[in-house]
Length: 344
Image (cartoon, rainbow, N blue to C red; front, side, top):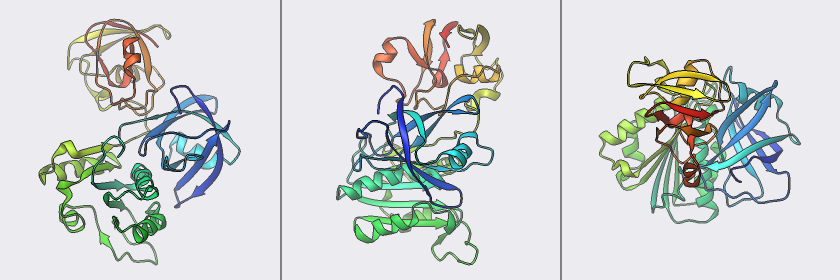
């Protein structure tokens, strides 16, 4: 795929659990998909006359390039996840751009991996595992997935099949609760350092990839750091797409740092933004709705042109070097260094 939007046709819809579904796509015109395992794409949708964009990790593997899939959890009240579950059917078309992202074994090759996932955060690890399996890669993989109940384990049977037929891939499921009428006999509760030492005693020697809800990742990150993992080996990714695209600093007072004027030329709005607040967060706080999705500097949805002034932009791969030379910025990860004017 590319930076420009591409038309995709939905070919299959596969319910996996009571609230998780895989959607399978192909290009509208015959082409192969090219992406790294673990990358994501951004869907550009029109829902009830409202343009929205959301990022979803590609759960399929690049070793099977004729089709591409995303695996989506239905979020109560979530605009896009509910629309996908309720409305998208085989034969329907959507627009998307990507892939993007550095969260991939292709970017961090290693002889041994540890994949840690929680909930639907299993998708990038699944893409990477499928790829390693398809290529008969000899890398040693320990895949540890945490779910609420056995009924919530996404890709459970496929992962068990992979583990049964690839001696270098081990899969461990951890459940917090029993499934009704089916007690869980495996690891219980939440992932702890004691459990990790049992299933992967050599975890400090592994390249670690973590994806899941923010609280899960924060707990894993602190646990591994406290246990002595070299954090240069640690990689994480998390998306929270069903909430307004604004960063944690939206609740800060505008007086926390130096204050600047930010002018958005298309809307004709000028607002205040301090040096500790992202431009996107300041716009959201002022009631200005701008295209955005991941709010982490990865998807590129909030790309805009900086007409004057300067910003501190700390992105995560969502913008290319040549775009930066053309004065493009990502609003979600750019903080003003002086008064700025933005074409947005």
